[in-house]
Image (cartoon, rainbow, N blue to C red; front, side, top):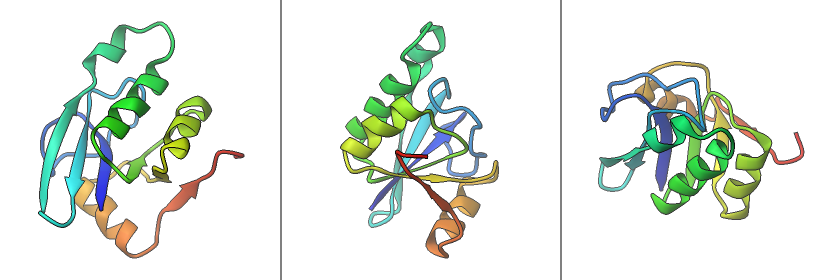
Length: 114
């Protein structure tokens, strides 16, 4: 399973970033190999619109099955859901705490119809 997180840094020790579409980047953590990659998302910071949709495409291209974020817009959520990426909402906390909450079913799934 590959879990994507909104992130400001290329480090599993960072905090979840509160933005989605204009987050500085994303960390995609591979639970099996215990490794991660960083996907730069800086190009979306200048977009007047469509940042969430492009960010969703970055998550999909990174191979993630799950996204843990603080918020996600409806258009981006539709794109992610259509690619079978499950979106979980988390408070701002460390990525390690996000993984712990995910593994203990303490995160809420965001549905397209919400």
